[in-house]
Length: 113
Image (cartoon, rainbow, N blue to C red; front, side, top):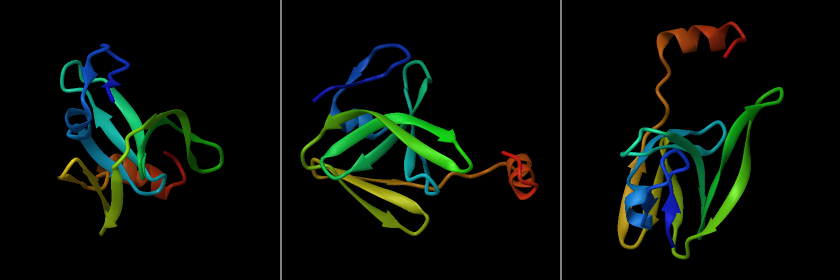
């Protein structure tokens, strides 16, 4: 299985792709992924045996639209505190929660972003 960056087209093997998660957004159960080559980001959901690529949108509240389903047999996930643990091929990645800036926190408290 090969996973690509939609920004620059570079293709990653599963272990390299899974190593590029930046943060976990628990409210929508989505991981932010970042390409180490071009910096492009993607929104990814990990479910057992599958990577889902899509986007987060707001319709009253945040939702994830899974546009592409990529089978990855053996892929596992589990919660650990506020973060997510992803396991595949004998390796484990712990992805921490999204850290909001002070401006984002104030906007959210006021009903904004």
